[in-house]
Amino acid sequence: MSEVARFLPWQTTIATQWLDQGDRYAHAWLVHGLSGIGKRHFVLAAAAALLCEAPEGRMACGTCQACRWVAAGNHPDFRRVRPEAVAAEEGEVQEETGSAAKKTLSREIRVEQIRALSGWFGTATHRGGWRVAVIYPAEALNVFTANALLKVLEEPPPRTIFLLTADAPDRLLPTIVSRCRRLALPIPGIEESIEWLVGQGVKQPEAWLSAAGGAPLRAAFMASDGESPCPGWLQRYLRALSGQGGPSEDALLQTADSLEGTDPAVWIDTLQRTFTDLSLVAVGLPPRYFPRQADLISGVAMQSSPVTLTEALKWLAGQRAVANHPLSAKLFVHSVLQYCARACRPVQRASGA
Image (cartoon, rainbow, N blue to C red; front, top):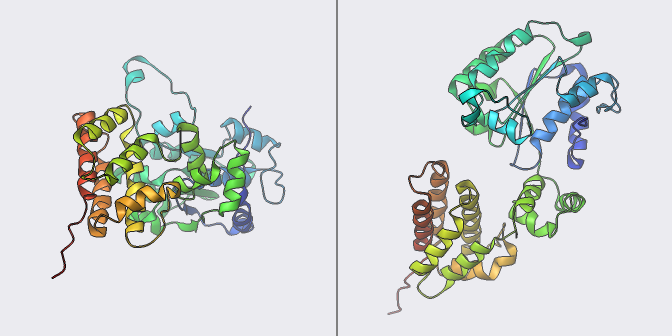
C-alpha cells in the first residue's frame, strides 16, 4: 500500500507555520516557486495533513483511516486534478478501450475535469472535516479551464480548500491569481539539498545540484536519467565552439546525430542553461549551472559578444515553445546548434589607431 505524502525536510518549518492557521485557511492557495523544489510534494502533504483525523504536531499521522484513504487515492473529500500525461507519469494506469488506447495523453487540464467537481461540491464533507482539491500544475489550465475554475473560486463551496501549484504565477490568468492567497516556497539551502541527494543515492550531488539550478528534486531526476551533470555532447560542443573558427559542419552534424533521439525539451533546456552560464561569465560572473566546465565556458564567453549571447538565450526560449512540433527532428537540432554556434563567433575587435 502507498504511504501518505510527507513534507520534504526543507518544507517542515513553513508547513508548520501554514498548518498552524487552523480554521483561518483561505479557500484557495497558490503555492509557487522554482521548478524542482517540491511544490507538488508540499500540496499533497498539506492535503493529507488537513484530512488527517489524528494529526501529530499538525502533520498527517499516516495511520488513521483518513490517511489510509488518502494514500490509496480514495478519500471521499480529496480530489487531485492534473493532466492525463502527468497522471501517467505518476503511475496512474489509464483504462485502454478501443481507439482511445492509442490517443496522445493531454498535457492540459481539461475543462471536463473541473466541471466534474460540481457534483462533489454538492455533497457533505466526511465527518464534517475539510474537502481538499489539489490542482497542478496551474500552468496546464487553458483559457476555458481557467474560466471554469474561476467561477468556482468566486463562490467557493463551504469547508473546501483549493491548493494550486505554479512555477511562475505571472503566466497564469490574473483573475485566478487574484482569487488565491500566495504561498512562496523558498529554494532549500545547498547543504540541506546535498544531504537529501546523498540520501537518495545521487553521486556527485554538488554537480547535479548546480546543473539543476539549486532545485534538489530536479537534480535527483536529472541524475537518474543522465550520465553526467554536463552531458558528453555538450562538452564536445563547447570544445568545438572554443576552437579557432568555431565548430565545423561535420562537428555540428555529429552532435545533431547524437541528439536526434533525445526529447527536444531536454537538450534545449541544457542549451538554455549553457547560454545562461555564457552570459554570466561574459560580464564577469561565475557560471551557475556548469561550474566544472568553467574553463571551457570562459573560453567561449570571452570571445563572444554579451549582447549576442543574451539574444541567443531569448531565441532558445522561443525554440523551446515549438520544440515538439518540428517537421524534421534532425534538421531542427542542426539549425538550433548552427544558430548557437553563430552566436558564439569571436567578436572582431577594432584595431588601435
